[in-house]
Amino acid sequence: MRTLEKEVVEGRTRIFFLGGAVALLEGEQDVKLVRWPAEFEKREKYHELGVLRLLVVEGGAQAPICTDIREDWIRAPITHSDLIARMQALRAKTVDHCSPRVDRGGIIHYGAQSAAVSPTEADLLELLTLNFGVLVPRETLRDRLSIQPGAASRNALDLHIMRIRRRIAPLGLVIQTAWGRGYVLTVENNDMARASNQ
Image (cartoon, rainbow, N blue to C red; front, side, top):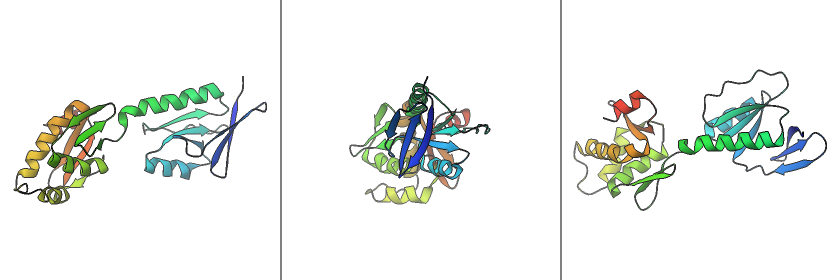
């Protein structure tokens, strides 16, 4: 059984097996390996960037609590096959939790699903998807709406949000209302999200 150790050399992650065999993975891998607790700052940086990360718990260190779906941990040393399996599992569980996007044709994509929206709705959804999970002020959305001719009446934004909610519901997405402040595009994952979608 080959076990792994890890070191970082000039931006590349060198995975070496006790017993001599060496494999070199590019620094631009989609799942980042982070030594825990030695690389605490790197973990925080990757968390802020939304990068997939696998924490390699060293020695007798206590394993961290991973509340982010983009993060998991393993204890060193680990076999190569177990490392690959954990990386694949991390990728698989985050497929459905990627950020939605709107293409030029006015189609919103989320995971393996998509839905067509009107050009005006696509403009509004573009702002919401770029700020996925973050509050977008009502004024910002209203300004985007006023670019469309004849679309800036007082209740027009509410009407478009209602229509967008109907179109994105089959994708598992919701728009939550922050009364008097704005809207948040997020994943439908709890009763509160479902209630705000109505």
